[in-house]
Length: 136
Image (cartoon, rainbow, N blue to C red; front, side):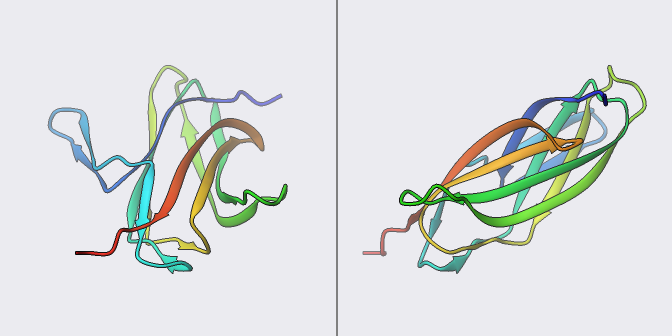
């Protein structure tokens, strides 16, 4: 049985700034709501910041984003991001920074992010997509 890492953070944001000289990261513009002019449509680009600890060796990771339609039981896939994390020391915090060039969102509603390691679910998070108010 593989060792599963612990997810400390799964954050959608505008940008993550790596301040290498201090060993710190600045998370700018964290959000859980996306405002769109129209649906279907494309979001702007954004960052995805994942922070993990307690892994062992090469760990295949997967992040799925799905629409949760209110009128159906089946989720609608939006994007499937796969990557590998290397854990040489389980005590060392590891980070993954994904740059998402934009998502095609079919409709307003609730969306789920599911992070897995070795095909086992680690954490879920959510965001909502809404119609932006027209300018007045």
